[in-house]
Image (cartoon, rainbow, N blue to C red; front, side, top):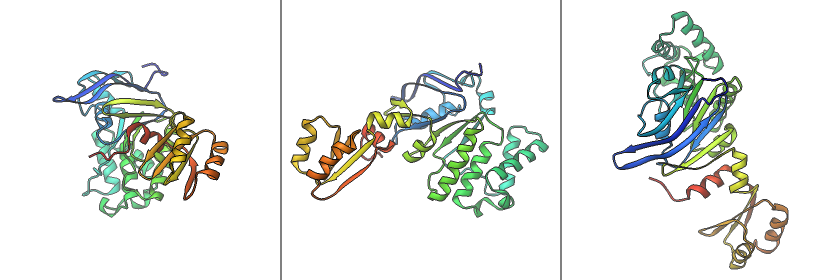
Length: 306
């Protein structure tokens, strides 16, 4: 593969389970050194894409290249150059922190000396040296996630796939993981992230793909998507009167009507915000910046998914 080529190249990707189509004609690329986010509600198809990406699930149609190699014929080499941090805790509870890394290194036939050096490096990088002899059951949630990340990096991969890496963590632990992921990206590692935390995706990712019902809805930078689909500012009005609804509709102002709430999207917070504050806020108005969560909800809807 040429050095300037994409690390991941998916073309017309499809995945079927019987008559059900989980992924439908999905195409995208991930560049070397990029932090790429794959987002979507439950059942959107993103997990199927991820599993095809690391060779766990065969393609039904289309083509997937990783490191310039076809996933269907070059999966052994691809896996040797890739790290995967799964959502579920798959650490071995019968081993210590250090042993979890050393044993995993053995799966890559890494020489003992090299495995020991790599283990020391990762324990130091993830601030786990002081717990290297502890059992996994003795770790906090944040420490366990950092150990999962360390294990995914044991083979010095060029690509790491992160499947909801901070689910269930408290804010402090989540930000610690974010800091480490930023460090890895700064060192040239290519990262692919799936997450339900929109703040996480907006903070970490250079580019984002949002999909639903197996299809791509949009791709772009977090900033660009926010600007296009939410505007730079959002005004939330509780219990809006018919006069405000008529005002935004007559002027073609982008908005959503929810139960007991009107959400207005704008790039003119000073002008429009002043009018709404003075004339249409009998009870409560919230003025805030547009977010990736606004984009996500506008594109995928607000109904609960089972």
